[in-house]
Image 1 (cartoon, rainbow, N blue to C red):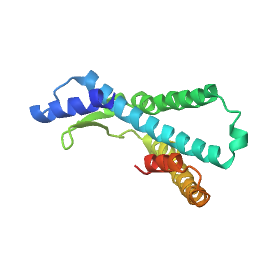
Image 2: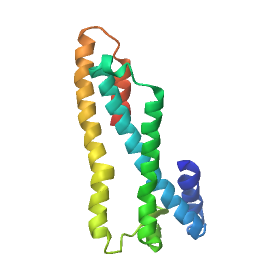
Image 3: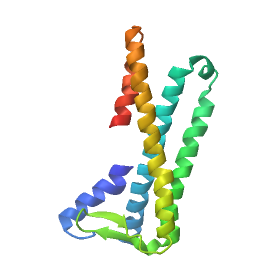
Length: 165
């Protein structure tokens, strides 16, 4: 999705040295970029938290079903729709083409963003990022403990590496 919606138009625009596509593609590129970033951070946060809960409380999490996981992931995908939609609803003419990076950016020129930008940054970026860092640190601590008892630790390290990247 990101390759078709953002990378390919950026490469074509760079070769043409202009915004090669029209206004509709500009909105699509902006929407895909913001949507993908929001979904990615939400799903990584959910992955690190659930892995930590699975390791810390194995008996309680044994009753979890895949339907519950699907609902959580679906909720993250639906919540992520709100971020780019909010930008376009506030001021759709603020989506601009940036010639420095050949990508579509948001200008944040409306006065509403003085309140909304810090609020959305805290809710969508800072809280999930801090949660990922704390959960990853706790997973590393568990990995050290598990490594001493000679249990399987590959799953913990996989989640930690994914969160770190």
